[in-house]
Every structure is written in structure tokens, then in C-alpha cells.
Image (tube, rainbow, N blue to C red; front, top):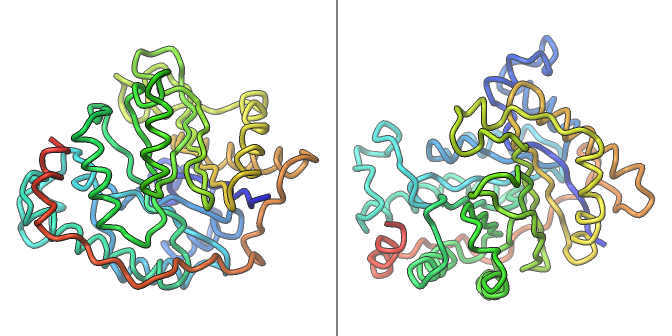
Length: 321
């Protein structure tokens, strides 16, 4: 039976910082992370989607958190084919994911940025959340294979935002593809009332890790502002629906990361606290690790990955377009 780690998809979100969840005296960068890590054993680094992570920050994160705490790092927007602001590009590079030289340079910077976490045994996974227009097909398969080649030795998790990946007739092929590449399939909870809703399926594609991300069930998911999309607080019954699913995942994988992405005010941390409490009192659930005393997370074997060079960038360019 695997460990279940519960956390949120940010600890620095402006709405959370302004909610009062962090107590006086612990509202600076170091204090916030230490306060969070005393209560949870995993967090997703959401900021790395908007700007490339830095080696300095990754080193500080590892130093400021207890043994056993892990970070799931979200891939930079350019690496998953999302629009990227020119202002966050390194060295004046154009924000052009179709340029193989740009892709190589950005991959190099991203790999360097997460390496301190990996060296410290704190890299829980790298999350590739693909855009809604990323659909099943040969180009997508090629793109996923090249991502796997560039990140050899990393724990990878993939979230698809187009429901066709998990439709009857396609789901088995999706599971086989991710399993063959050693990528964890991310399960999601979101509203099921939209044409774009991804179903709450829970496939297991790697023995090491399963990931569940709770987006909230706002019906403004496809159209509203960021606040509208994530303004949702789960009730206990909604979270309890997931207990058997999470338990089954833990029976088949070494770790399960349960992450709340409804980052509006303190909703995500409150729901994460509730989920942890429900799991701890559920006699059939797996014991959660405690952030202060958990053993070191297993280090990822092998040397640091060497990002693939432009020999494969041309097909990455086509796949992301």
C-alpha cells in the first residue's frame, strides 16, 4: 500500500496570502513555506508554469522544508505549447515554441532550475498540463515521446485537458501510451456539466506515482476569470466520494499525490485539510506521511537528464502547433 500525500497547487497564491491563513510572523517567503510544510507533505509549484524556475529558489525550497517533503513542479508554459509572455523568456529569446533552438535553450534552463530539487530527493514529479487543443493523434504522440526523451530519469505526470483522451475507444490507447513512456496519468475532479469537462477517471500508468488534481466544480471553468474558474469550496460529501478511488490508487502505486487547485482565498488549503482528515479517520485508507517526520523521499536514480537537442525539436514544434 502506497503513501497518500495531500497538498495544494500553490503556497504563494495572492488570494491565499491575503486570506489570513498564514499567521503573523510567518508571512514572508521563508515563513510561508515553513508554515505550509508543517501541515502538508507535498505542494505543486505553479509559478514554474508562468516563469522558468531558478536554481537558487529550488535550493532554498529544499533547505526550508523537512525531510520527506516533495515538490511537484509544473512545466513552463512554452514546453507544453501554451502561449508564453515575451517578458518571461530568458536571454531575450522569442516566445516561439516552434523554434527548435528556442526549445532547446528553454529545456536547458528548466532542467537546471529543477535540478537542486532532484539532487535533494525532493522532486515529486514534473507536471505536464497540456492545453485543451492538445488532442489524441500522431503529432501528440510524437510530442509526448520527445518530452519523455528530454526528461529521462525524471518522474513525469501528464494532465490532458481535452476529454477525448479518456473517451470510450480511446482511453485504453491513452493508458498504453503513457505507460509505455513511464508517465503518470493525472486524474481530475471538475464540473461535469460542460462539453470540455474531463471525466473523473483514475487510470494507473506507472507503479511509482498517481496524481489527483481537484480543480473545483465551478461552471465558469471554460469562460470566467481565473477567480471565477477556481471559486469553489468542496463539501465533505464531495470529498468523501473520492476516498475509495484514492484508496484504490494507493493499492497500486507507491505514492498518491492529492492536490487542490481551487486556489481562491483559502479554499484549497481548507479542502486539503479536510481531505487529509477524512483519509486519516477512514480505517481502510493508507496512513498519510507527516511532514515533520517522514523519511526522505526516494531519490530519482540515474544522472541528471540531458535535454534532447534540435534533432528532435522539429517534430516537437509540429506537435505543439
